Length: 313
Image (cartoon, rainbow, N blue to C red; front, side, top):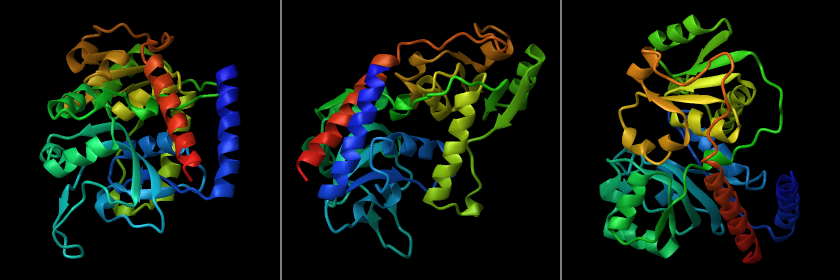
């Protein structure tokens, strides 16, 4: 509790100082069909003032601002390393523009992005602005293969908080198959609500709408009896929120879970359907606590970085 109070006091002082010195801060924003991206944005945004600037991940190299924007650069990189759209011409979206002063933390590189991430220009950028916090072991190994100063940071969503002890009697099934949902229902009389992290891109939600949608999801996770999911950004937030969670390993790109999967109770699809799992849907036990040192290190690093940028304003 004492640590939480200190964080709140430091954040209040920081916000007051921001109004005086006018330092600009930013966070990565998204336009994908996966709302899990925006949950990562919320995790970063919590450390920044309310008027922090959204920086579109898909336009990082073209970002412009009147002054440098100290930006938390975390998340999944990236959907469009190069965009050949008629509105932009041939333009690489990486590395970020000089208007961004980055904190490179909790970063994951997709296999498609690796050639861009390890290009000479990108490696120089990482070395200039590092060390780089890798979200997973796959990304860490890539960085180390190029002698880029780096470390395993884990996922920034581990820093999410839950200050309420109230719980609803609801189990959330997040992006798992009907067969898995039916299995859960066969094991409990509790309400099982099916939800997804996918959003319809035709809705054309703007950044604020996406963040509000993500906040509503997090409110559900905060109050859940437990969460059963295939989604990394349902499982990791639930650790931070202290909501019992079980991760079913069914995603095709399991390499991005390396180092994070070990923090949470998890099983294969076959183990789940065969009931070969140590998980009580009616009275789920607490999550493993191995994530806590990673969480605390992330919180300390973010707070230290914010203070350092304020002192340089």
